[in-house]
Length: 245
Image (tube, rainbow, N blue to C red; front, side):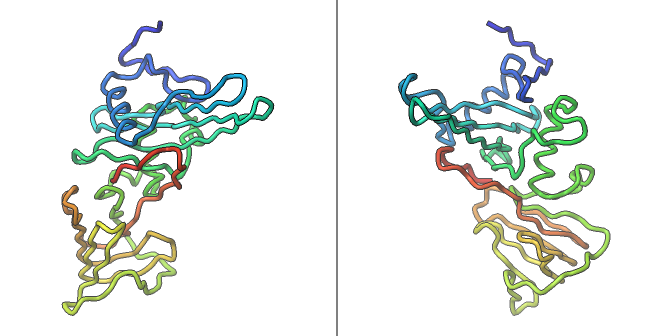
């Protein structure tokens, strides 16, 4: 049996971090997340006839922030003579303001550039995942103001090709208001326009976002920026239930 070596990160040939080198806190966090997602791992069936297996690997983590990047993998063989089919789903998961969440990533960490996973720290994979979710360059990630999977991205200038947006309504007071993901109430005292890309709006003025379930603190911003709804992949039916973020 491999001994756990805290601090040393060893990846397998697919880029997954070997479980023997995972910090215990990350193992515990991953187990907790999968349990809350109601994911059943293991194999069922008859080896010489049919079988289905579900397992997981960790590709990145941040101990201090209680975040982990997980790959769920399902392999199915329906008949003894058929080929197996494989499906994979990647998540950024963990705790955000004490709330468990699992966000399906729009892209696989195995497609990372800049040297790939072998040249990237576990924390770097988490940052790459966050940048993919909000559609920003890595160097701009520290400026992002988050509320769960909704964010404000500060801008220095107004983009081109903007157009009026029907998702936000102007109240009698003159401010604009919209409800994103049925829980994030956005109020804009100023200008709000569609960028033409789904889930992205240009704002200029004073912005406040309040989470109506009270699971996240309110955030605010003044100036030019983008309101961004985090990109997420579709969820396979076998994955279990998503955790809200």
